[in-house]
Length: 115
Length: 111
Image 1: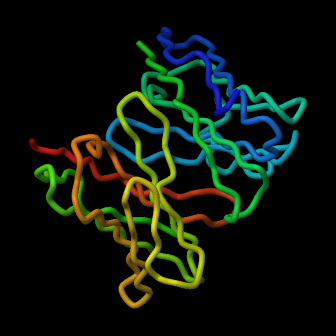
Image 2: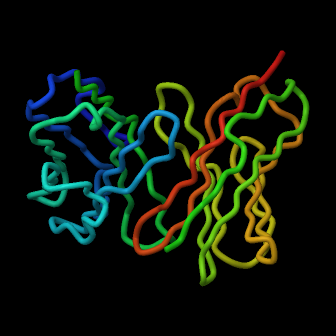
């Protein structure tokens, strides 16, 4: 694919349920990022992968949030015991490498609503 | 820690008029600065970026931005706005392998 692909595009779940959000980065991009964007706010960093390893997970809000990238390509963001405050757009992004010289490309996001 | 402030939450501009969006950053070293645009239902698209050198940078869609170290600012400008420029605009600084975004400015374009 030409861009970063995220599925599902929309997800409605009940409070307390488990949710997985998938990201397929641009082919060949080694760096992958997850951001969260609440209504009326800018995106907030969650986690950054370089290859298969999470190089920086300092933005994950608590231990209900976890992300994996087992083969260094597709990534899954996992949210356990969802709460209404988790409702947001979850954005995935990728870049060719690490460092500011590499443009970061964003997907269209997964809209999560917890009811 | 670095931070980015976009003082204007909403701006309304008439089609054909000029546009300026403000961005102020807080960062100790030379910042790597970016402007992204987010149209309804679409992902963030990079408009332009500043790393070093010429303080006036040109981007896509007729946008430009000027880096002013003395004012810690990186304001985005467009001389003549088109209806398709209605969107949300985000300023960001790159540090530590990640982007830190401002809160965004929503631009409304009047016919």
